[in-house]
Length: 200
Image 1 (cartoon, helix red, strand yellow):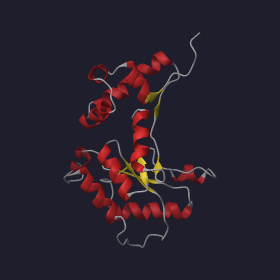
Image 2 (tube, rainbow, N blue to C red):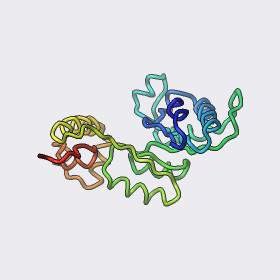
Image 3 (cartoon, rainbow, N blue to C red):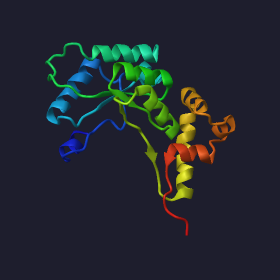
């Protein structure tokens, strides 16, 4: 990411893949983020995500409550670092694909990054966050050939629906059980961008 920022003039960079909080201590994350923010003022956004239980287990820690874990991590980011981190501000957003994490993002962060969800969730996220918070939306885009792309897109959506929390979010948006079970074309089209070439 450092090289992409260095090679551009106005692009504001955030993590396309949210930084998993199990991978580094909060003070370490803050120190690194502050260095980037100092080097590229106004162009860096730090995204944080609580991830999944397996990621916590891989570090020898318990996953616990995602909300409590994220709240604690965000709080400890402001603790002292050694060497001292640069005294610069930078936006911090939270990966939030569920209503509770979204509400927490509005409370303790500068915004949220929902990813891999239909536009209906984006509209709801803006209502929850209010007009002044950052709302960065992660969108998957695949091949422009509609027939070929839909197969690839369906694989991605199917994998996401294997996570109960993700499937529950889709259900709350009003998609029928049958659409979710079959990974229907309308559901795939709403979640993954693909196929903009006109048919001949």
